[in-house]
Image (cartoon, rainbow, N blue to C red):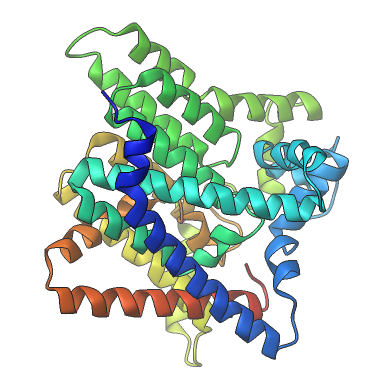
Length: 371
């Protein structure tokens, strides 16, 4: 029996308070730096880069054809977030950009709660709190409070994984379908639900588990199929991805970037170094997760997510952001910190929070091609 919401919220309160403290620290650091560079905080959080694509979809809908220009087709962006922005904006004051930012910030709190719930269930309350803090202090965590889909997707991912761990199969299926309508990497969550549900059938048959296994990929498949119908070709969605140079290449592009970045004589760009280290550390942490024998759904989700991000071509600099929903990768670190001395834990967390605040602001204010 799952705890009643009030009790669950009370148990998660320290994690949510810590999450807010970390993110407000990052926001304050960014605001001060932006003010000194004469930039507005709200426009940069609500209307920059991918936010423009989502707002464009909310305003004008999707394209009807492939077009000719590279990276100029909005069918690459999944529909749930812009649909939410359009629907909620009708009921709230302000612009759709403000609505989108509000949805992202609210989703980040639901995501932080879900991250804590998974960590608490797998390794205990202290580890759950630390896992939430580490996710809040991810190198590019400022994205969590931008008009992007990472927070919404992480909320679906965290609560879906929690439902799988609790064998609440229909809730897991619903969460997976919604995640599949939110981001392309929703297929990683669908794989986690389907694989775990099918494995559970070996011990005893469950119609709900079988339903979840079959239904989990339907959100992702529905959008991919709809794009194909809209463009009049069976490979329509994949043709769009080829326009963005995002087809799978087995990691060749990733390797080329790493060689170029770390093999150059001149000083490499700091932001790209952070992105590269984030990816490399994520691979190591996945190995640690396998060694720790994390639950199957967590391993499948993060494993498939890593494969999608590392084995794809396309732009390089957003890849740390693409890995943001993979919070189970941080469980080995959270578990270690839970057993560490109070002094070491405080030093590591302080350095992580300050580093996140700096790199988040650097991403928006200094790096010319991000977020």
